[in-house]
Amino acid sequence: GSATDPQSVYARHRREKINERLKSLQNLVPNGAKVDIVTMLDEAIHYVKFLQNQVELLKSDELWIYA
Image 1 (tube, rainbow, N blue to C red):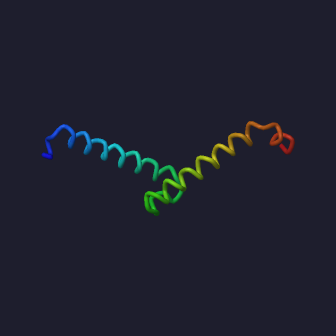
Image 2: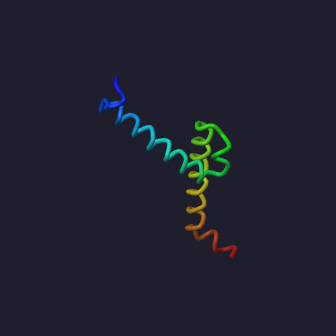
């Protein structure tokens, strides 16, 4: 396929968007820029789960008992 083939152009644009999103995610995840993409995605999953747990903890009444 030629570089101007619509399918090639779409694929290149899609890869560029994926790379942009990965760079944004690397900046959000602690140490995200220092590891390979697979490890960074794994860390992102763990980090989001951690943040979800923090939100649940903050929403619970148990936290305010100790305040």
